[in-house]
Length: 283
Image 1 (cartoon, helix red, strand yellow):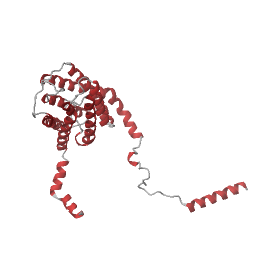
Image 2 (tube, one colour; image 1 turned 120 degrees about the horizontal axis):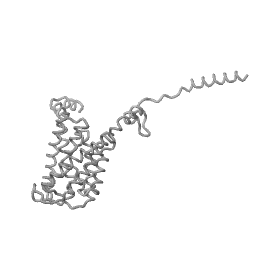
Image 3 (cartoon, helix red, strand yellow; image 1 turned 45 degrees about the vertical axis):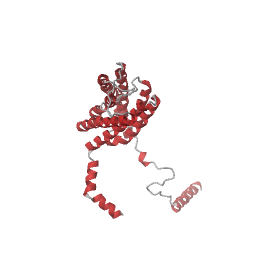
Image 4 (spheres, one colour; image 1 turned 180 degrees about the vertical axis):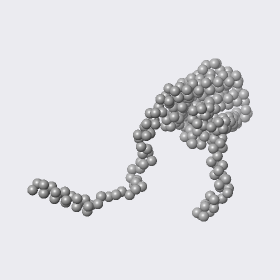
């Protein structure tokens, strides 16, 4: 069995598959396409089933937290055409990675629309005729600013990113009048779903502009108000505090290095010599 596995691992087909899996652009494309498909399904299905805002908020939280945790090492788990430019400008993502990500996000989102419409309606594609006031765009600007602010701080600190991002979006579902769409891809895809939260084509344009502006404002606030002021602080903490995370062992587990027990005979000799010296000093 071991020899068979060795032959498989050394085969040209296996090596070719490994090289394909390690292609960064392909990983970005697959990660963003798959993630956007699941994101749209997980966050928009509650509108078809008419489960209410509580179900929508819970589905947003669990869908986002799981996707970010899984896809962050693959494609930075952007899943949002307004987040991708921020990662390009502030987080070192390349131009090609960003362009591939945006294309994959819209393709994955459209696949999600086809799936939801196929599940819950008689047509794969429908066009929304739901009218909204301009308050929708204003609330999306506020929500996008808040998410952009939290996102840039979380990605700088690199701590609790899934919880912070999913948590702020879930909170916005209950607070923001627009239920915290904060994603131009989802905004555009709502144009092809004729349910209560759908958006007509003209309002889609206004909302997308508001979302992009909100994310940019939030990122600027985070970079210059908080993040820039924390760079020296966090670098000093990293230098002064040793990384002992990987050195911790579960209770009851032996360490990698053998424990050096004390030499009993040597200790006894030292103890006798000490007693002799003390008695001589007293006498």
